[in-house]
Amino acid sequence: MSEYVRIFDTTLRDGEQTPGVTLTPEQKLEIAVQLDRLGVDVIEAGFPVASEGERRAVKLISEAGLKAEVCALARAVKEDIDAAMKSDPTTIHVFFSTSDVHLRIIGVSREEVIEKVQDAVSYVKDHGFICEFSPMDATRTDLAFLKEVSKAAEEAGADRIDIPDTVGIMTPETMRELVSEVKKAVKIPISVHCHNDFGLAVANTLAGIEAGAAQAHVTVNGIGERAGNAALEEVVMALHLLYKKKTGVDTSKIYSLSQLVRRLTGVPIQPHKPVVGDNAFAHESGIHVKGVVIDPSTFEPFKPELVGRVRKLVAGKHAGRRGIKTILEESGITPTEEQLSEIVRRVKELGDKGKTVTDTDVVAIARAVIETPPPEKKVLDLRELVVVTGTGVIPTSSVKLDIEGKEYVSAETGVGPVDASLKAIQRITQNLAKVSLKEFRIEAVTGGSDAVAEVIVKVADERGNVVSARGAREDIVMASVEAMVNALNKLLARRAP
Ligand code: KIV
Ligand code: ZN
Image (cartoon, rainbow, N blue to C red):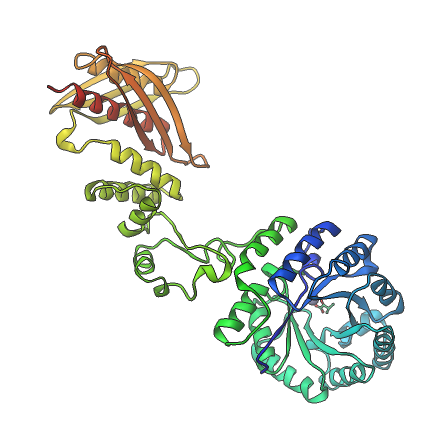
């Protein structure tokens, strides 16, 4: 197993073969520049014979003065190789099918394959290019023939032999065996190119390297044909941290490149994708958050900074006090122990209703809870709220308030349920203070119809006192009523002798 493993990136070629993905030459160049900064050894930039755009993309990248080898793909036919050469790459990746199932379809005999491969590799080498040869569908090719064709390519001057697991049917064990066998047949370095049809592309790539392959074909975010290719970020992190191998990759640039590829290809990243998925460094469960806050290594295999990311503590019904406290502290909010208990209670209540609670929701809830006076300082408290609204009915609200131990009820109509509810509160409290509403704002509505609404009200009384207060609930009427009750409590506290 070699100390240094070469990274052959094929995001711009096999990755671009992802159904629905097309990149312009300029977009390919943008990704290639970042791949080069990341430190990959080879950038497979495209398949020049396929289109004018592909030729232009490979040429643009070849002329960009990158440190990496720039590689162009070509079938083992003169037309493809000529198109590749015209794009001025460093390397030409020649491929030809070798499995019986493929040969039957294209109507070519094994003898013809040997002849075509030797002619193609010699042609590439005669023109001074580095040549990597791939026997396509190698993993379903008769082993004796695979060795024969690999040897033939080596004799014709190939610099590297790649073993493509074209339909992703290998296991780590069969991959190790196959690489060991091909290694017995040739002296030149071996690459592995694994597809992910059984979710084993990364494991098979690493197995190939264990067996002596010197180079891994990968794509950013694992994009590619069907189920994709071995993911660059997973292979590299496993090589560095689990296998203690070296690559040229600066891992701190992985996340920004992953995001660039996501944006330009439009292929989303599954949230639980290792290394680059949204949840790869997110913690919600109370036990995990508690551990991670004390020592991140309790529930993280490596630091997120290593791949250019930051840890995320997620609010939600699984979140414990410590997690919510940390989220609030990061927003500059330090609730009392009682306030924190109420915030945690409300976050869990929301989660139990099926709502995904975001950090913004937690902050909004916390601000509303902090504004609510403790029970001993409250003059009034909401006991009941019933609203009727819809088409063909006049919006009506019935409110029951507790004022210093006595219950009062009022029902009002309004232009909407919020208006009716606030009027009902004002009616009940008119003997305590005559308030008018000066401002009403809904400030934070965090996406989705089940979002938490944060309502801010500003009220004034007949003596000229002005107070603002807020409420935060998943129901706008409830949030408005909470804000109004909080405002009245503030006002009455101010008026108290
Ligand atoms: O998967 C494959 O076989 C390929 C070849 C072109 C190497 O991508
Ligand atoms: Zn492939």
